[in-house]
Image 1 (cartoon, rainbow, N blue to C red):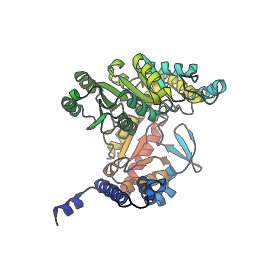
Image 2 (cartoon, rainbow, N blue to C red):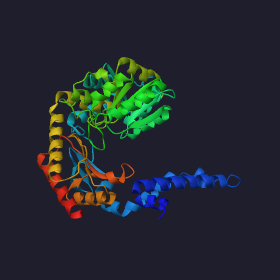
Image 3 (cartoon, rainbow, N blue to C red):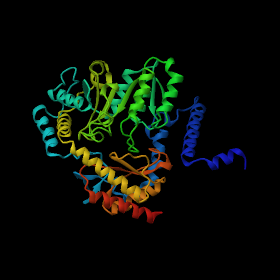
Image 4 (spheres, one colour):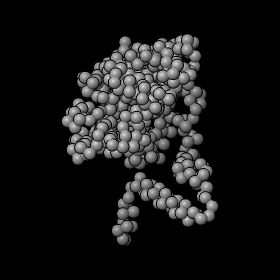
Length: 443
């Protein structure tokens, strides 16, 4: 067997898929060239012929038979606390990040309804024009209080917050360094900024330091981007070390608190609370309103200079965007106030997460690097096993979503459990014990 053939045999499934994708792309390039003097290929003007759509259809057909039997592909009929109803059956729900159990809380629902009654369903304009309502500033003051910053600004989407902010603040002369497991919204923002982008190994501040030694002097602004809690593995970076690196190389630091706010820290106030650091040590605190804050949208906390810059200069953030809706603002504000006055919710959440993690490890389940946050993966390393185990758990009244390639490498395929404060100890124990029992049968 020649070297080329040997390399192909030893190649992982993920690398084979990547190679196939690259070969298809090259073939399409060649086809386009050969047709340069004739008709234009349909794949250049018909969306249903785009390569990405064709690949999606191929992946969909692979799992269609299983999907019809799996409840997590069905429409949810309603959610009450930690229980979800699907096709008329109730399930213990681990597929939503209602971390503090505030989505559906009477005060949060009342806040949304009162906001609609007073301001309508939309602010109907950019906040710079006439779309500003008092609730916007009340929410931003509460967010600034939680994160310990001078000011905050709330935006209509968590995803677009990262895209707009990074895209506005940085450009072609700058360098963006992010954790290799950073959220896609950050990567998209980096790409659209036009700045040079480098990824460093997950949570490796020493590798980051080395990259900066080599590259810092060649750029103007440099931004380091990490997450407070990583959404796939539930682990926490050593933030004080990243702050040291940032200061040593005169960089800016951004922390995405989407899965940290409301979860870690003695009061559930996120990373600065967890590590006991001064919030000003981090230049940009980003978060989402769709998790602990039981609403929809994104936000940035930081210095007044940063917030004013974004409010009046960032095209996709506030300047050319409608303001966050009254209902979403009212809901998030009510949730923030509950978070401030009821820190025991975050304490209870972490206790349930610790119980889940300890029992899973006791039963020999692979929980990866999860650190007792609201995210606990059970790594199975096989997409089909994930789907089959998900089916078995559904039959036992447990709703959890599989995370498979291409969201993660095939070898890291998993069931991802979101832990909420409303789970009981009995429910957690039942879930982990059932999981271990069904996995043993599959193996």
